Image 1 (cartoon, helix red, strand yellow):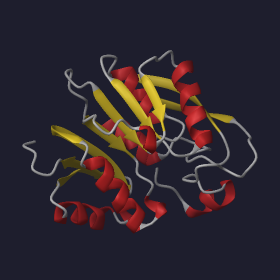
Image 2 (cartoon, rainbow, N blue to C red):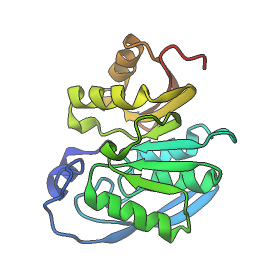
Image 3 (cartoon, rainbow, N blue to C red):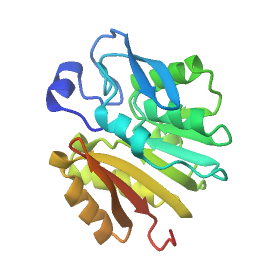
Image 4 (cartoon, rainbow, N blue to C red):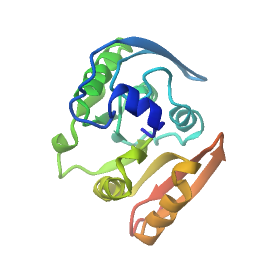
Length: 212
């Protein structure tokens, strides 16, 4: 969920738990090789006016899940484009859409239902079952919450990966993608660059002590 400062200022902070701006819903379209859909958005959520280019890059050029994966997680799900596409592609799995923003959670549920998907669970970070391990994480993380908060978020979620799990992040270059990759490596994760395109980096992350 990276974003431009003008958008955040105009619509209220999209990472706030309770948006203070009035509701004004609209729709945006997403077209991929294997998925086409329309998403309802609103003021006070990230990517209100269009699918974020980083999100689209992650979905078009990121890796596929494995057929044995059961628990997929979208950290910072917003109104749900990543979670919905993952659920469409992986009917065998439960896709957990993790989102603190109450308005975004409502939209994510609506968009999953509109897509005819029953394998999306939309929850707050506090609702995650702590004993559950994660097979894969996909995320366009909220860079603008600040470095300290972002690091705390990644520490929380990346250490929930199963030993053979992986995470896949998209980060804008000018918002610190390279420094974030170095930080993750320094913390003991294996962070590698999958691709660099259109001002974004796609990063693959293996768990600390993992064998992937």
